[in-house]
Image 1 (cartoon, rainbow, N blue to C red):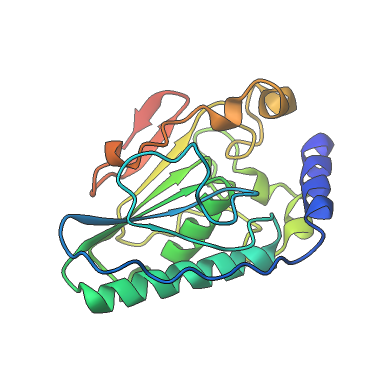
Image 2: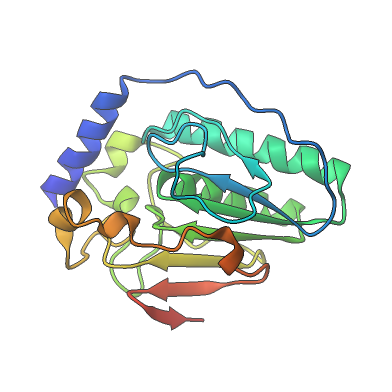
Length: 217
């Protein structure tokens, strides 16, 4: 799918390299309920895009452009915020929600940290690192895309260990490179934004995946 590779290359070129984003301080600790932390997609450098809804405790700031180095900065910042909050509120449940590039950030964080943390769950909306089955893997695993974006953004897996993780993908080439809607669906038909961004609808133990409207445990 050369058009998909060209799209990603164009986004990288538009990014112009690495952006410097001021790291937000962790918000004052409130140890009740669920600590919900969100990571926005491409261009949402402060995770404050208007699509986010619901009770959000913390937003991750990072240079939200689709290259591996920037994804790594996002993973590191997500880890800092979660670990700092865990030190302040050791018994509070943490729910990490990411969209698109932000889903890849959360995905990578889970893969790297599941052996050393518990009482957390993850929600991955339109994850470009989604493993195949059903459908094709996400765009980050495409052989023409992976070398362009680089690690840790490149590739696809479901290495979530014992952390409950819910993945959502609906006719969207970012999380299913062979999606029926194709590139037109992404560019003009709004398929990539056709998700529920209210973080409160996703439970603290949600797992499995919603693929094209069908739930798969």
